[in-house]
Amino acid sequence: MTNSSSSKKHGQDQSELSGPTSKSQRTKMGKSEDNDKKNSGKKLKDVEISVPIVYGNMAFWLGKKASEYQSHKWTVYVRGASNEDLGVIIKRVVFQLHSSFNNPTRVVDAPPFELSEAGWGEFEIAITLHFHSDVCDKPLNLYHHLKLYPEDENSSMSTKKPVVVEFYDEVVFPDPSEAFLARVQNHPAVNFPRLPAGHTLPPPIPVEDANRRRKGDTKDNPLSQWFLSFSEADELLQLAAARQQVQAHIAKVKRQISLIEGQHKQLKSSSDQ
Image 1: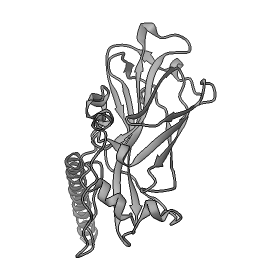
Image 2: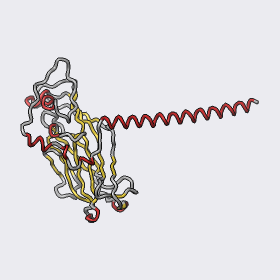
Image 3: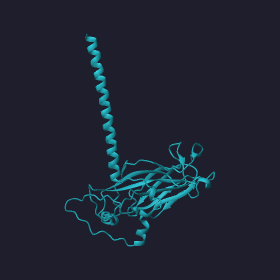
Image 4: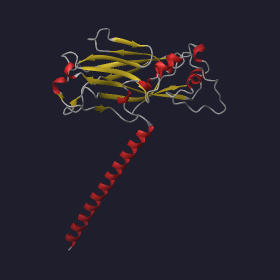
């Protein structure tokens, strides 16, 4: 583990929100094997279904309660891009912590898919997503570097506002089964595809356990106030701002080129006299 505390300063409350704020990755899963026809059912060729996810960590400095080996309380997690319940897609998540932790392999079998611990060092966490049998028979391996301290060494740490590092990914499942599509066709966590002309699905399967459904809803997660936003509206605003910056830079370069051309013409006219 990496101890970064020696280079950080303690001070007034200030949050450090870092990580990408735009859609940065699209992971296409391999096609599932057709070994279990009962679970897979009929597959829709040349159709893709995508599930936006966010993974990362949140870390709170413990302030006066901090000790040499426990300076922060942190949570690592996988969530829906807008905090939707991912339990309809993900069956379990395995977090592989540093070997110095007791029981470093942690398994979370139900949403919210998160794990909280306390410590002092930063290290890489392997995150393995296991999907329901009708979704995909191959796991997805993610890697996240646990971040406890602000990127800017001049930033002060806070006990009230956390360091947040998150990454966006769209997990794409090609050739989904009819059973999978029917099960998630009205679920907000899923980007539902356009079906082939004339193709209809059976009615959606109702959720059997309403209590389990409420438990999996991450909208009321106490950490949600600190989650970064990955909505389409935010992305459009960022693209518009970036476009304005590019246009301003182009205008500046054009003015510089015009100035240089004017000076060149003056020098040429002077040499011709």
